[in-house]
Amino acid sequence: MEMVDRITLLTPLDGIALLLLVGSWFVIGWRIEHPSKKTPSVTIIMGEYRREWMRQMITREPRIFDASILSNLRQGTAFFGSGCMIAIGGMLAVIGNTDALQDVATDLTLEGGPTLVWQIKLLVVVAFLTHGFLKFVWANRLFGYCAVVMASVPNDITHSLAKSRALQAAEINIRAAWNFNRGLRSIYYALGTLAWLIGPVGLMIATALVAYLIWHREFASLPRSILMADIPAKES
Image 1 (cartoon, helix red, strand yellow):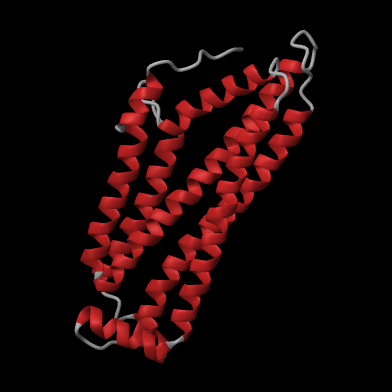
Image 2 (image 1 turned 120 degrees about the horizontal axis):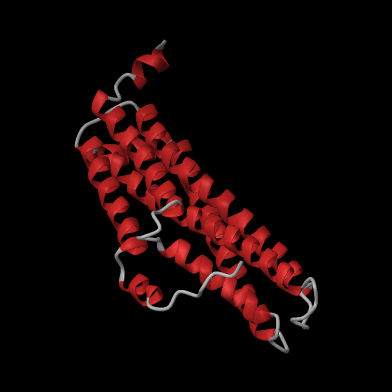
């Protein structure tokens, strides 16, 4: 009963802010991966470039250039995955140190409060970081699958399996990139969730800023305009 009473100290505004956070994270992720045909996201545009990459790879000899690019992509997933693990460990350490957490809470809000409430807020941050970590791990694994499929693509473009294998490699590469991007979005929202420590209004403002930042980079950034200038044509 005591734990329930303490949780009720989270105000209705906290609940609204949390729903806004989760809803924003879900909606913007869905929109990025399912945009309209007239306004594709950077994620979708890059998918076409990845397919073109694999089509060009068929006749590239040797394929050291392609292997180097894929290796760099895997290093990126490993770097962010490791970063998430460190951040998760740090957050759990803070959550477990109730005295230090209470001091931080008092400094931020100029008032005391149940430590459990602050732990719940930080656990939401941990949830986003954990989601990001799992996405980075899976993206790394998919890039590994892509490397194997790429190695099985015949160099002879007239070979019956050349184009189909290259397309398989491209689709796996795209799925890896999507999971990598999902991991990045989770990190953005984890950072935004930290604003909840100063109150629900802070969380709402941070959620709006994070959502705008992600939307702008996917739909209104200069790199998107550059990429839109010459999107590779689809092949059946």
